[in-house]
Length: 386
Image 1 (cartoon, rainbow, N blue to C red):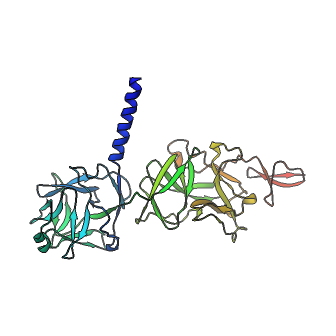
Image 2 (cartoon, one colour; image 1 turned 180 degrees about the vertical axis):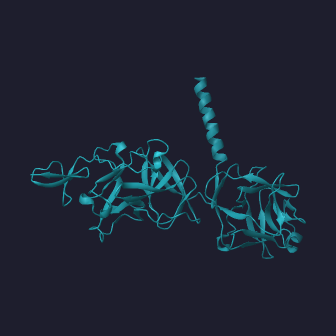
């Protein structure tokens, strides 16, 4: 009994620590219009992925960003502890420039390449400009110029052979990143089937941990995964995807833009609405579903209506729309069962196996067993009953 109680207490301790030291997620700021005094920022060197930390001995120490492949998004842990004052708030002062404040204090220019942290700003720090900074966003390399009001010195990263650090130099090689609010995430539940779909026409969304998102293309060889968005990648607005995971997830919105897959054959709607039927003679339409037995291993894309015609799609969900010319047979479904076979199978074509037990007439009518003469389709194959 004592062992069980100990394990429960240990679990609660770990859970609480995870809550206290939750990650901060940040997006690159690219224009002055994105600056807001109510937001929180970090100063980032993007080559080695460092953020400015504690200011000591006239230098800003470096803090490692969590590793991910997206240069426009970064994450940090242990935010704003006494030794790690990553985050910066800004305020426009009376001289028209911004003060930069961390939980250590205000970032102030000293002399040469030196910077200081002061617990408060004096009126002279504002008047002479040593405690305020002009913020400008450059076009070419995209660096953020954070230049001291008193002198032609900018916050920058110095790649020392001993210990690299942040200081004040005549050029900039840093970026400003803004903390993304986690107050109103897109909440999504992925059930036991481990797949769902997602679509927003007006939001760029960050893929959370333990989720992958896929776009698809299609040809006569079948349905294939076209692009994979992994953790911290950005699903661009207007991109319909299939999600793979299991559990409850929060998708954060960002101003950063991801890479659009122009070959994607997935579409979506923002509301519960009927799919336009203008192209119904040339396309087949599929929804994410299970087979008629609700077998969890049967998850895939199935005709949403008899004959593969348009149907009513749910809000913020994706559907599959493929030209009839891309299918050698009138396939009624595409299964996902091949995706989870091994770690490398994710990039292989999805097997076009059909588990639908129904027959379909040439007109698309579904029947359990044909009784009249004619041509029927089952599992993507034609049968002739004479």
